Length: 341
Image (cartoon, rainbow, N blue to C red):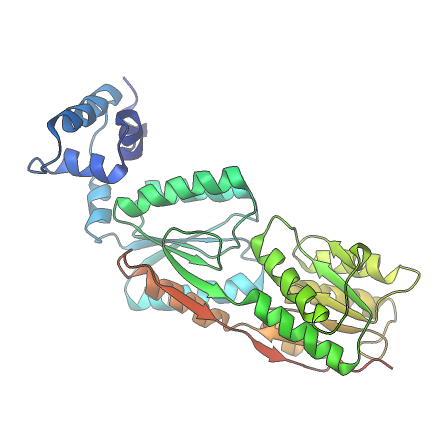
């Protein structure tokens, strides 16, 4: 017999070959009118595994749980700090506790944290980091989220890539396309791009928008015009060094995130390269540090706290019908971007 403390409802459901929702109803409601043979199979699975009903699971099903799970990529990144702040503002208003975990852009860690939060019977799960371009991971994540939602939990994703639960969709491609077009209109024709890991769907979306914005004006990037580094300040430093060490360095550096752009500006400053007189620099996200940079960073501003508040508001709604909220960025052309001399 398995250790009762380790056996979960989803283990019983899998052993019986039914959904978590069906297993839950048959184990907790003796009057549930399911098929007799199916009920016997669930009861037999529970007995064989040594399953004992967890009162916290009932709390989840009746929405009486007072905790919410928030999965982000990196709390050290102000992008996620601002978004998380919005989530917590609404959670405090509703007298809910937020359990926040950082996956550090590791799909295996993300899946493990989701499983742990589900085991803790959180009332809702908010996935605030980009989805991954990983077929196996996405299939495993979808199965976990589907079973969790069927058992009474609420799921919310920030940015596209998951089809379970509500969605707060940021227009990453549209914002970057508008920014690229604005830079061409300033007179730029020579670009270098600081991109994060391609396994992140958000990075792909922003790159797609950037490419399209340049293509709208007849400019096509070569493979050497893009460097893929860590989505961090350090990634911006190394990316700027790589691009500016070319025989013909670009006159405009475009980063897919503000934090990378700020790193690039630091490298340029250290190496005596003037921004924007010699090189223009742009980011994406709208971090407060973008305003404090010298010169202030041109970027696409995303209302990150409002995104977090919206995600938490959606988490309080029933899973069905699915709600999709579109969020657009605002172009902020500041002093770090100017016409090339």
